[in-house]
Length: 268
Image (tube, rainbow, N blue to C red):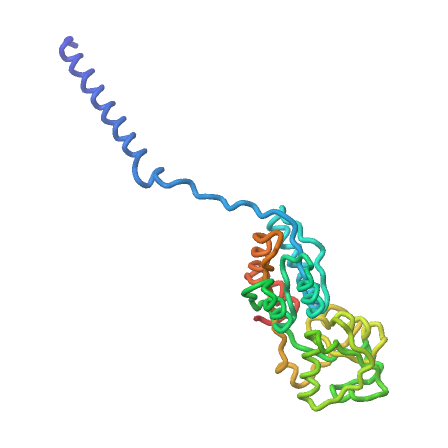
């Protein structure tokens, strides 16, 4: 090939190469390629989480705590404190260090809110009452009217406890004056006494009756009209505020609601 032609060919090749390099560089700088910063990753939740919950929530919240820890392995949910909502509210008002409070009624939650210790509680479940007797029903109890029989041993929740207030309303609506042998400070105590045969009958939540084979449940008229509504809130002074907010959101979310529904709690 003549030298002039060879030189011309080399110049063409070089020009093409330079053009291709420019195109590639331009593509790399296109708006969609790298102009946006990388998406930020949410920091992993950490810390201990202290939860106070109504006694009737034990089965549900034990499961919810387990699932929450699986989702957030750097959060340690401390053993949950279960008791009557009135007792828990009093302890919180007196200074108990708590991150999350779940009450079985709005009245006791409002006590905490009124003290400025929390704001914006949200409803997450509902519950209703059922009459329970020891398995086999040795006392021959058939309905609410039998609770007025002085020959039977009857236990109810105390009036200040949500299940006690609901029981009083249910009995009043039915026109029944119960012959009560003892008043208990939480619904678990009522269930335990009836299940152990220490009482012939008592009123507990539907969800509690479903947790044991030691009692038989008897549905009563009017129970669906006396509904307990459960609110939950992260306390203003929570030691782990991010974890507390996340736990509340978890209970209110689809997974939390699925756990509650599986244990017979009603929707909020």
